[in-house]
Image (cartoon, rainbow over all chains, first blue to last red):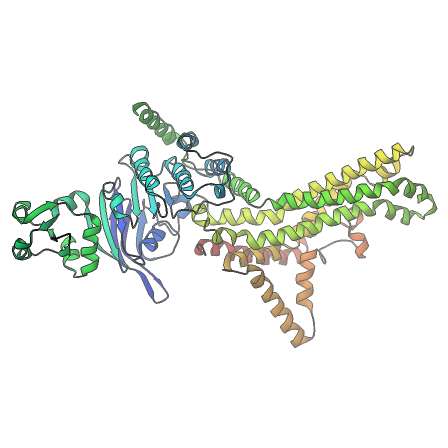
Length: 291
Length: 311
């Protein structure tokens, strides 16, 4: 059974179409990055998955309909919707009491263990903690819940680089065990590239690109082409071209590394560069190829 | 690192064997606890009012021996009134506090969590909207009246003990106080009165306020009051009557609730004769209509909690 399965998922707010027939399948044990520009429908898609908004079309999360079965689903799903959604008036100890009280899969000892590694005190109220500490606290709670799906919507927004790095390190080392599934949206694409197993681009309510990271690394190559080789390189039909320092950087899809090596320095592109190529061009070429 | 991952693996094992559900009662209990953590005015407000009242009462104790000496000159009804008046005032203050706290609590109950976006956190836990809203409704309907009644009873007891000490200190007997003011009976009557006249009778008002707090994006007070004013205004212009305003007002302050009281002076809880039995109270048409309206408002509030996100 796939962890998340959506077929022609649609959602409109008045005349604005937020999700325009999304087809999506996420298997268990994957770490999926959902990348898209502002207003592309990322948060709407996640809200539908989490049972926070009604939708049209078909959507099953862990075999359940999230809109009609949110409370049962939340036994197996955790989410950090945003930074700073923990109630500001609550004390850390009360938060632990409450989650332990209502969540059957919460391991309090584990949460205490995670918190012991931070400077967060049990008697503090959330409003007295810094933004980074609130995220640490939320992450400690979520990582102590034995869930099957974890959804993260811009979990590190507004945090400094140390906290951001620590966030993903904890997630990988202390939480992810290959039987769980993680879906993450973020604008800081470079920071999650090494974390992900799969990547999807969403634009104007549609999934325009979907690929596993293994495929990504074997299919896409980026070459910093020497000026004299530019014409030869262009003949190999790059999917994108941008100006680097003194050189043009060309992005190729499914072109043999041996063919590219003579043209210049070959490397694996960043997700961000491919994102710009796919979303920026909107030629349909890449998305067609990726399907 | 190894030992750590071992212990983690073990904790996964133990979790897998643990039951994967938590009873609705337990979820409800923790949902109520969270309301009490968030809204400390539920117990701080009556405590504060009680404290201030007690201070005033302390000052009045100076005159108590003189008052008791002059008591024999009065007729029995005046005697009774003179002794119980302070106690009735204390009970009355607790009733007003119940009303005020309940109104402000309800207006914020479903609005506050949307305003500070914490609804996204609450909804990430396996707690249904039904249980959440029922837990919130239980505050004005049950939790708050019990708290104010207990504080009212404690207030009465402290007043009785202080008065007795003053009377004994000035060489008088305190027996008259304790026979006129049977504390245990008085406390039970206060609880019964607040629960019926100030919690169950106004239930439709509380239901309406919960609904508005789940719907309004801002200025919940305004949206709660405006429709009432509008309906009362239309009624006044069209029929030159004010039934609606009287009905709403009566629900709020406990007027019109089933009772045996004939004059406003009778309604205080030290008078056991004014109260009707629970069966008569709950079975009265006014209560049945009230419950129906309350249930309808609450159903809408539950639905709103499901649809509405942060604002």
